[in-house]
Image 1: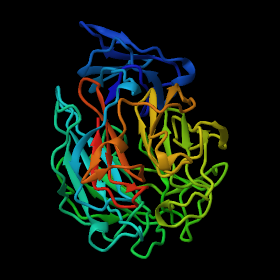
Image 2: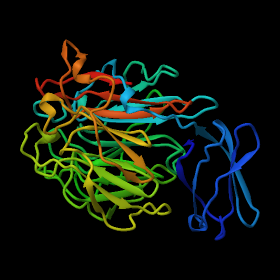
Image 3: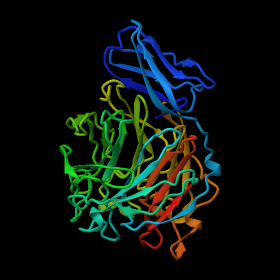
Image 4: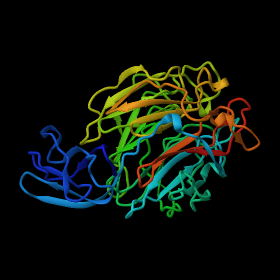
Length: 446
């Protein structure tokens, strides 16, 4: 599944040393070539940009080597639909039946001919004030289907049919599919998190998923090299990246681990990569074709979930590091970028919308008055610009949640997806109301 204008890398064998052709079905018929520089073509990987004139939908795709060998396939290409942050309007998407905080929320898309069914998976969680998972809600997985053509609406949340082997909150999660990894199936990975006594764990659980359920028991895979909670997890070309997070004593760490998802769905081991420029937990990040960026977070020791105290150092910076498009490993150390956020912020939601990145809610200096509920930054190639705002047509804090005004949301879970016409949507689930310190089981979206 590709989007017009998206940079992409395809892996394989026998492409040769000399650049050949990458071809797409053209709008109106025929084919269009995506030029590939000699430096971006190797025997094992080809990096290219999807042409703007590529036809949308279930279309033909081909690679022709300089030796004349041609391989074709059918892929899904989505139009590039621009989004204006100023026009984003939050609306209620109902309530969430599980725990309100520390939820790991992820999506999986199942492309078909002319359709792009999307399912959401919400894993574990905890409730204030303890912010540690209990033995029931902390093990549950909920599944909801996105309503096709429903302008971002979702169906009811249902238990996925399987429980985690142990309760977790503030874990991270990714879904592997044939479109983002070498795995031929669809699997949900739950990484690290806090256990029922509030200690970070190194566990990695995985289970096969369908659009409506978790259809096999979770099994333990190779654990992280060290326990982590509140980490940043990203997936790109079958590589899982786990950045920072807290240790068992709640201290943010600089560690970076990466593991590749193999053809059987197992992880080929966790490898320690260059460390972040400083400790970071309860932040967020984005992965681009050749760079990874870690944004915001807290640098001081914090209680489970990050806490609500004003004292801990919260970060404005975005560490950036380059990764190999072939191996997925880092090609150098992290560089401390400029202050992307206007003030330090942690425990926020981040929406990666390709050319736009949004942060919503969280702990920051103006959080008590919610002076900057949603900020936006532009992304050009692999570079993230400074966040500014506030943006959006309305604020969640001005809407009703359950029986009260929503207040500033701290620690909500977020997810984004695209429809078949390229339109992007976002969803926020749960969180803690900073003013009342009450849990919020509301769901918001656009």
